[in-house]
Image (cartoon, rainbow, N blue to C red; front, top):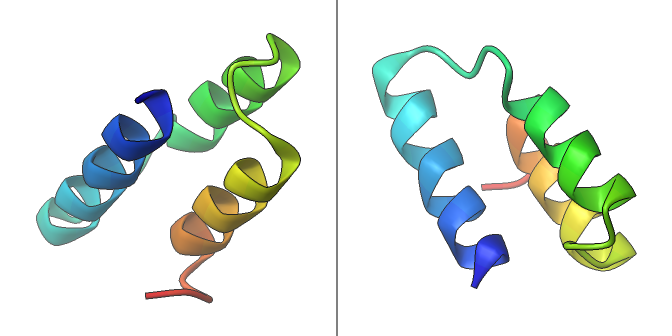
Length: 52
């Protein structure tokens, strides 16, 4: 559920032009074991613009 929420938040933030702080949130969720490595990698790639 957190994965889907973060994915949607990234998309909305990109549309608005501001993704500031989202990578920090991803890092915290990953460190707290709330995201898998695969989910973290995909969401990070979305933030970096390498995946649509």
